[in-house]
Image 1: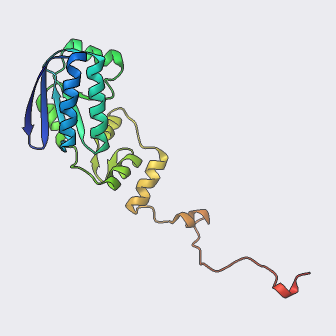
Image 2 (image 1 turned 135 degrees about the horizontal axis):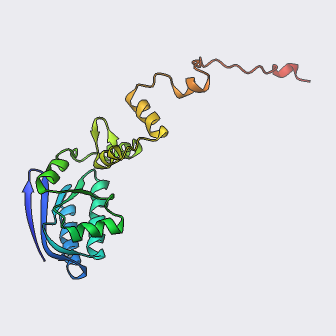
Length: 194
């Protein structure tokens, strides 16, 4: 298997050729891991020259998408022929990957991925349903296309973090009243106990 590599700005385009099967998946995985370890965070895999894909190849793709998602990056697959696309459909993984018809569309899709985020930003991104400030992640875009929305908890966290929720949590528990800090219990003085 030959793998050509082409850098388009910050995006790496990998164009493997031949079969992505058991024999070739190990070499592909080795190169992919090496690139990820070097800090590549946006990858397009152009399937125009792939004529066969097996579960070994899919395993490498799943590993890549998980590793890239963990660092706020992205993976987009493009130019799938009918037999390869059928494998994604039948396996149920068509929704797991971002798949577009052409290399140019794949590059455009990854241009919207924000640069690497800090660990705190990544945590906030996950808590908020794939959204930090105004930069949606690829998963957030997929969820939006499918009509999915944030959970109630994610929405509340987003409001709290953005400062749009004006009442404090303590104020909400007290029915909207602010606590003054004054002690309100009415104990008898120690000498008057019976």
